[in-house]
Amino acid sequence: MHRDLQLRFLRTMLRIRRVEERCIAFAETGEIRAHYHLYIGQEAAGTGASAALAPDDYVFTTHRNHGHVIAKGGDPGKVLAEIIGRSGGYLGGRGGTFHVAAPELGIPHTSAIVGGSLPIAAGVAFAVRRRKGQRATLAFFGDGTMEEGVFYETLNLAQLWRLPLVFFMENNSVSAAERAGRGSPTSEHAAKALSDVPRAFGVETATVDGTDVEAVFALVRRLLERVRSGEGPFFVESRTTRWPGNYGAFPKLVGGTTDIAWALDAASAPDGVRAWTMESDPVIAYAAKLLWHGAIDAAALRAIDAEVRGEVDRAARFALESPLPQAEALAGVG
Ligand SMILES: Cc1ncc(C[n+]2csc(CCOP(=O)(O)OP(=O)(O)O)c2C)c(N)n1
Ligand SMILES: [Mg+2]
Image (tube, rainbow, N blue to C red):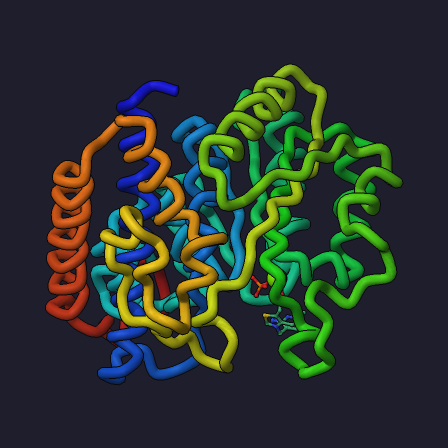
């Protein structure tokens, strides 16, 4: 893989990580006043899949949208401003953390209703096909969506109508059942393997390690070529392991902010995140891989991290200095 692309992957994943670490700081200072969800641990999935998309392809996303928007090229300042409800955000601060849609990036809609974006994504894919367009649609959703009826209707119609749509299911080992304390490590679902379900509808399905950015990119790029030649839809199951900070009701920076030096020695990560850092952290794993293959050295890695941290500091300042929306702005975009 080309080194420029590898460095772009690393920067994008780090950008998502640093923005979301900032979200926790914003929650502590009261800038985020209600519930919010972080994408930490899933950065490679969003980054790899989005890098395979053309700039004007469509993305649909969920309550866990921050990383998807940044991966599609979102400006961290506008993302953070939207998250804290300021006028400089993508939707003028009216969407907030659950709804960081960015129509100019091809992200027309997010939904905090589990499964809520899926039928709209299928509708957009249908419209593109009717107009004989080339734009593909990729819908990110969680494993919990497969417990919702709308998933089955959408999958069925997408397959019957051969829609140019990639169903990108992020199985992050976090589901409603587990949140409710019933202890199941994956979705409360009767299927032995979630990827058996789309196969039963005749939809070609692939499972990918969602912590491996290059594997996700290569898979989605292949699928998109086929989507554009009318072979869709496709279903991807991206598997990740839950970040330890996502065990409580609110995200918590277990182990503090990510220290890029963990890429040199993952065992030096603090107790609460050591095992996860060593086995499942997509950002640290990728930095370690690039070091191992000689694509970067330790000094270059520190420099990239410092650059990204500087960028996110400026983004956070932009968000904080951005005024609250005016009441009149509630009625329309802007
Ligand atoms: C229709 C609906 N039911 C319940 C909820 C409450 N809820 C919010 S997130 C969530 C779990 C979603 O799990 P999953 O789709 O796997 O996404 P994850 O949070 O793991 O990324 C639930 C049940 C909701 N938002 N919408
Ligand atoms: Mg989940």
